[in-house]
Structures are given as C-alpha cells and as structure tokens.
Image (cartoon, rainbow, N blue to C red; front, side, top):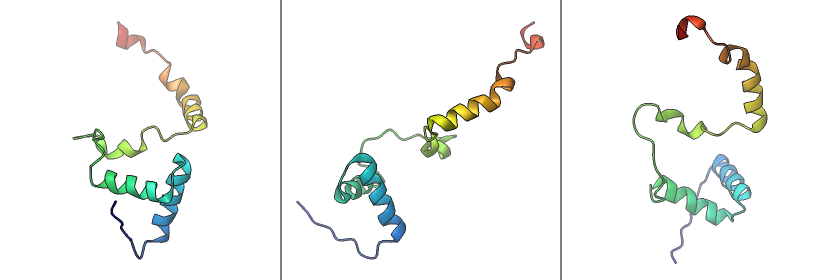
Length: 87
C-alpha cells in the first residue's frame, strides 16, 4: 500500500476531516481517502449535470426540525386551492 503525507493542511481541512471521521465512525485516514477519491471522481457516484445542479450539495441537509418549521410556515399558502385554476 502506498503512503502519502500532506503537509501544511489548513485548520479548516483538519476540522472537516475530523467531523467526517466522527460522523461516519471512520479513522482520519479513511476520511482523507474518501475525500481524495471523491474529489478525483473515483467513487462512481452519479453526478448531476446541467441546469439546477448548483444546489445539489444542500439537498437533504435540513434537520427534521428544520423541515417541520418550514412546512408549518408555508402551510397556509400551499394548501389552498384556487377555484379559477380548476374551472
């Protein structure tokens, strides 16, 4: 197996690696390998293409509480039927 040393990492990168490792119960090495492979396009993940893909990273990022709050706030405007549109 090959070995790689990455020097002069930013604190932000170290924090992101630690966060990912904690979230997925991985080692820092596993998290770094995942991010390197993802960045290189080697994971075989389906990538969105074309119009509308700029916000893909945010899809599914709301907590259950965020989603509940949003639904409560838009409920009145989304559950009304305009009779003129259905005649």
